[in-house]
Length: 219
Image 1 (cartoon, rainbow, N blue to C red):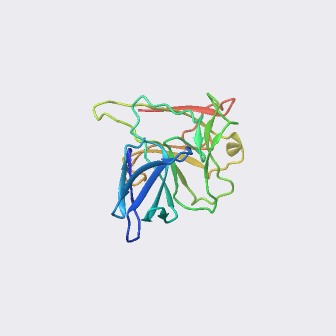
Image 2: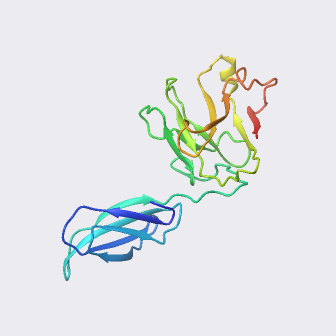
Image 3: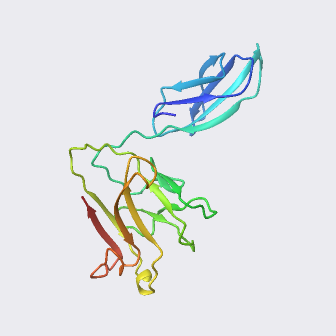
């Protein structure tokens, strides 16, 4: 899979095979090709788009097999800087071109959600639903790739909601770590900051915010 193509391979002998595709949100199928091999590269696609692809065998004139259908996403192109995300639109709990991974699986599906209740600006924020998870459960929210210029200095600027109930009751389990790196892991990434939900823990706040939102900036 690339930003503008999806390769497919299937088991089966005989042929020829007819390949059709469409954007998942569309109703009309596009006839892509008839091939003799059991693989194909579908090109000319749009980045950051979910596609449905189906294949069937042409046995003879007016005699075909049923379609076998698969789906796949083309990845996003790297985003130019300055880049801003207000978390106002999303699918399955994440904004477009964002993804997530569990570092430990607690048994329910989506740890992140677009939240319309607590927000600083705009209409939404991104919220991690921790519930009553044990300390070993962690989840990563992964931004799209950004186009960095190695000769430039950049600033990461954001707001985060720190629940004063965590401070009042001495709750210390939840925290946020922000990394910058080339891969979807923390091993090869640089830790930028570590922010506890308890405001008595780093970074310690001298005064509580009235709306519990705190502003941070890192260069």
